[in-house]
Length: 119
Image (cartoon, rainbow, N blue to C red; front, side, top):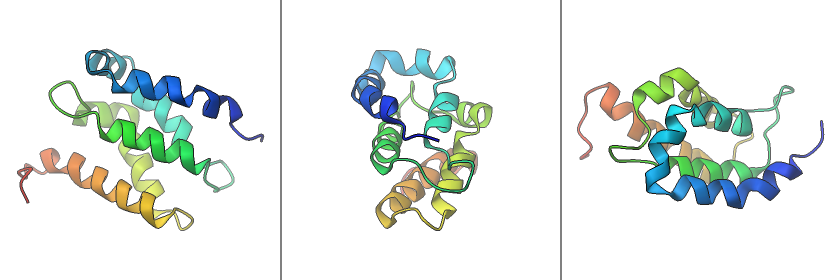
């Protein structure tokens, strides 16, 4: 019921770790997306958490691409894709973050529906 100040203090360190190419796959294999889902998901009473935390964490996860990046198996196992969709559909989400969510959803759904990356 209190603001996530500890999460905000920890955010720069988390973003540093997520930016390391050699750490992507090990972190994803150890269920990174499940932990991140809990950090960004809507609060129990329906509100949204800190916008800075959501924006920066989702941006860092969105940048995790390539052969060691986020795969459909990771999304299914963690439920992170459902959380991003819930944030996208949330009435209180900012327009900028809605665009970011939409881009992530489109990028992640392309391999599932066997669409090319070239629009």
